[in-house]
Length: 93
Image (cartoon, rainbow, N blue to C red; front, side, top):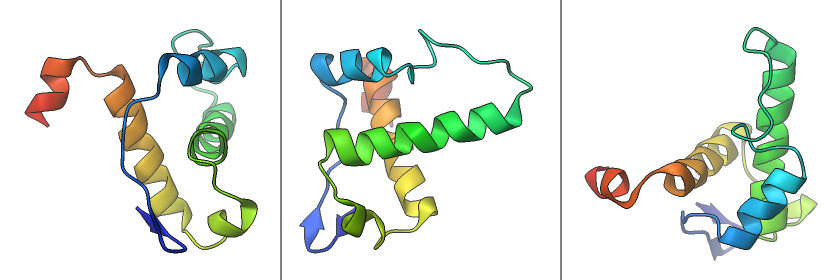
């Protein structure tokens, strides 16, 4: 994903980054939500996107204002997929 002349590469979260995600209450595996609560799911998804882009990839609010929700969401989703996939699963993709 390219934002303001920065090219961000999808990668797995580090152990420390994942611990921070868990501590923030955002990791679905450690902090599940009620499946039929669409509003909570949407909020959690947005918070995870923000965490990945701002806390992990160090983007500013100005940077985020130059990317659509769709692009940001796709990028964050790929980061989570890389984080939770086993090495064998990641190689297949």
